[in-house]
Image 1 (cartoon, rainbow, N blue to C red):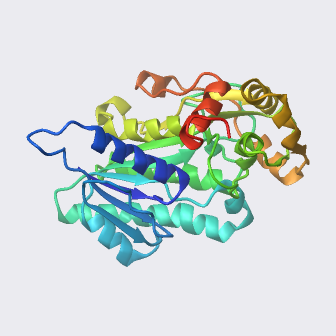
Image 2: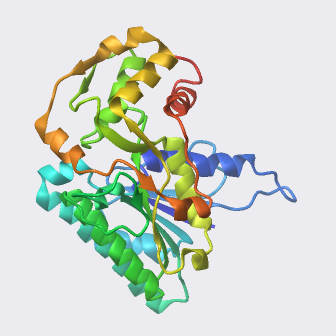
Length: 333
């Protein structure tokens, strides 16, 4: 099994790689050998090769608009291709050209390279595309059903919606087996803040837990749809194993998550870590971020994904505990 992860240096790419490596190491050997797994990790910066991985692993720094690099990556005919690379929401809104250059042109270049090489050889990979709930916008119901129309109100959401349409059409034409995952906001993200407009959802939990101040730019009544990095990795891995027939020619799916207000996040943090940590949350309204977030969906009815076996947390305390277990070695910082 050869797996290519594009965007492997990002948070989700690193966690996906770690999950694949752990499973390989934990798999009992048969006749003295494990099931062979080959990894190719690509990103705009060199991804770190996993320590202790017994299989073949190649790392490559490149962009999706680098035709020579794409030929090299896709020419190896991986069985599964994870497309996680993207310019995040806030940056895509601030830099129109860069957002479309990476999120749209890069995606089209990847799909076209798969098509061109697939025409030459008998090869049809599974492609798992990381989309976003930002494909929805405008006036929508409190719980958005699976068949609701896509009306993005940001450049990032527009780029992801176009990517979903491309994925569906290339899948319909038999070029690859595509699965598009509308990922919720991932919380609590480890590491430093990024330029995503949604970054504060993690910041108001992560920084106080580590004794640092965090800025809250929106009202506590703001409601959002989110899940943990642990669940997001489950989504990606489960998508790679789905029977294509189970998707019924609708390859893009809304992932399950938790609909919760910022105030409920803060209350869950108090229950887990005590009232003292809440002093680190500084309320500094930001109209630009509030305007972007106000256009995002607040809740979904993801019955297709649930029927296909996707699962997520059902309370925010579990999301906080997942962060503590995965990033703090199971102990409060």
